[in-house]
Each structure stands twice: as structure tokens, then as C-alpha cells.
Image (cartoon, rainbow, N blue to C red; front, side, top):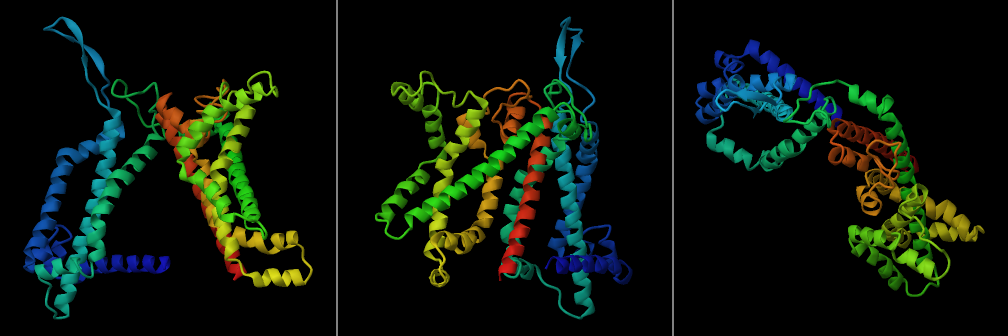
Length: 454
């Protein structure tokens, strides 16, 4: 499908290239004056719209566009400074360039230009269609027919226009802006509007991977991966065991047990995590019960000891992760074919062998996409870390991160606490690359395994 689409795009490009040498004067004029072919063939409204948008773009380019591009390259040349006011006889603050706004307007200028290029291509396609219809001796569509097509064969374009515009300006533009920040010096020493920041290339990436930030990045990355693997595997393993126990033959009150565990999902995770934070605090319920029972003589540092804090996070996460796995596994077990199980029992296989060779592989095969999503979700699991430990306890060897911080919570700290937006942007890009690569490899292996199974 992808190759076919690519081929059709290439063919369209060839047709538009050949059109200039074969078509009439009005069609050729459309390469310079948008809408010329439409105006020449009495499609006045469409031609005026094309021409008006071209004039508007040229006017914008002359008045604002060139300046926006220039400012995006320099990111400002005049910093905020004190200037002597001859009338007042004192120094007054004179505003300077705002690098942040200049970069944002530059990104917006790029998007406007890309949109104009797409509009220019649509203009050429319209001119080609008119020429082809005239060559075939067919009647050109009227304005009413063009509008009718927007509610018929082109209905998908009409419906997608507004959502795509929203995605472009509220998703694509901020994303491009965030990526651009990674290549600038936008940190706590270069905060606009007081200070200017500039382009530094890949210096921030080098700083994170092999520079001063490497001593924080790699330990936090290691803990992020360890946490993601353990949190995903433990929730899956115990969820499967719980489902097997509840669905075992002879167990009474299965619906009651399922309802009890589903209740943990009915309570928002944020509330559960806040309750757990209070329960495991130094003066919380758990420590109070342990000391009152004589099992300990002092509070256990569940959140203040680095190792215990990590263990506590993993254990608390089971409360949230197990019920979801249990539900999915229950559905798989209830729909499992009993023919294979009965055949294995006739051959003398015990329950463990049946689980190992039949039941468990089926569960893994069905839940593989979900497990991949859970792993990526745990890599970016902001809530569990932030609401339980806040990334603590503090670690003097790390820059802007605590002992339990993940990459995503470190990014949060770099943004709001230390104001190192360039480093935060680099971390965001690296998280995306890590998640994307893992997803691509994992989904490909799952797909290949599925094909082999079939």
C-alpha cells in the first residue's frame, strides 16, 4: 500500500512537470499566477481564492515573513538593558528582543510557507484537471458541482479540514518548537526576555550523553529501564497467577473475588497513590502499626532510603497494575479451547505442563501488544513516581534529579525547577527515540511470531 501511494505521488509530480510544456497559455500562467487557469475558464470564485491567497502570502512574506525567518536565524540581537533617559536623568529599562517569541514566530512562518506550497500544488492540480477535461471535450464543473463534491466524494476532506488545522497549530507547532529548543542555549542563564539565547547545534545532546549531564542521564536511564521492566513483568506475572487462581475449578465466589479486585480500578489511580503515600510515610499507618506491634522500634524509611523507596514504588504499583492484567487474562481463560487441554490430559500432562505449554503461550500471544503498551507507559509513568516520592530522596550526585526520578520526572524538574529547557527538550527527544525504537522492534517481533503461529 505504501509503495503504491509513493508511486502515485511520483506520477503526479511527473504529470505536473510535463503539463508546463504541453498545456495552453492560461494553464502555464498558473505556474506563476495562481488561479489563472480557473479565471480564464470562468471558474471565477476558485480563481479569485487562489489569486487572493497568493497575493496575501506574498504580502505577508514581504511585511512579516522575511523578518520572521531572519529573527529565527539570529534569535534576537538586542538584549534587555538599562538606558539613560535624558529627560528623567536616570537609567530606565529598555526592552529587547524576546528569543522565545522570535523562535515561535519563525516556526509559524515555516508552517505557513509549507501550507502555501501545498496550496500551490493544489492550484497546479486544478489547472491540470481543467486542461485534461478540455482536451477530452468534457464540460468543466460548475461552482455548484464543486461545492457538491465537498459533500459527496470529497466528504472526507471536508470533515478532516478543521481537525487537521487544530492538530497542525496545537500539536505539530508545539512539537516542532520543543524539538528546536534542544538545539539552543535556552537554560537558566539565558531566560528571555531579560537574556537572549542562540543556536548551539548538537552541544546539548553531547552534554547529556558524554558531558556533565552524563553522570545523571545514564543512572536515571538505567533506573527507568529497570523500573519499566520490573513494573511490567511483575504486574503481568501476578495478574496471570491471580486470574488462574480465581478461575480454577472448585473455587467458589469467583464473581465476588473479581469484583473486589476490580474495585481497585474504580478508584482513580491518583487517589490510590496519594493514600499510599500517606500510609507509607514516616508517621503513616504502616509505620505506626509496625511500631505499636513491637516489630520495629523506629519508622522504616520507605521513601527516604533510596533502595527502599524503589522497592516500595514497585510494590505499590502492583496494586494498580495487577487488576487490569487479571481481567484480560480471565477473558482469555474463559475463551480458551478445551480440546487442547483435554488432549494434553489424556496424554498424561499435569496442570503445570498444560499451563507451561498451552495456556501461558496463548496468554502471552494475546497480551503481547498490551504488554508493549504497558512497558512504554511505565517508561513515562509520571504519576507513580511524582505522587509517591516526588523523585526523592535527594541525590547530590545528580543534577536536578532524585534517586527515584525517571527520565520523564527528571524532564519535569529540568523544566519547572532548574529552568533548563534545552536539556529538558533533549531528554524528551531521547525518551521518544527510546520508546519508538522499542515499539517498532517489539511489534515487528510480535507480528512475525503471529505469522509463524498461523
